[in-house]
Image (cartoon, rainbow, N blue to C red; front, side, top):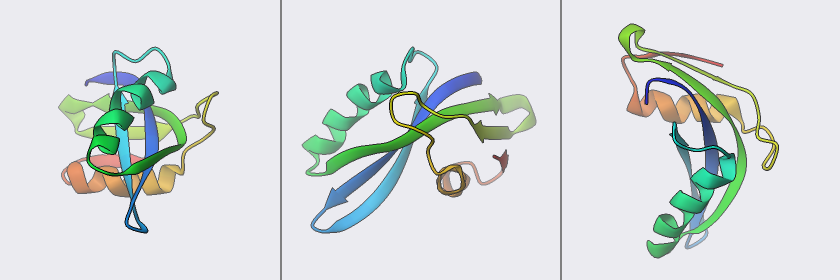
Length: 98
């Protein structure tokens, strides 16, 4: 999505191994909306999930820029440094700040 939207950081654990997933959607009114949408799909793949925080992402596609900031009232502030690292793997040609 282009613009500013909520995002969450989800810890996914399977067989004592953990990975982290960043998800954000422009349609979400609340951070929990994103978690309720995403967690069942991850759990169907055998993961235990935990939302470890949230915030906002400002996406400027034309400029290839992402800015990660803020917090979730429900889940607290995500580790923005980790979120940026994960986003850099998906948006390698973007400038990503927090």
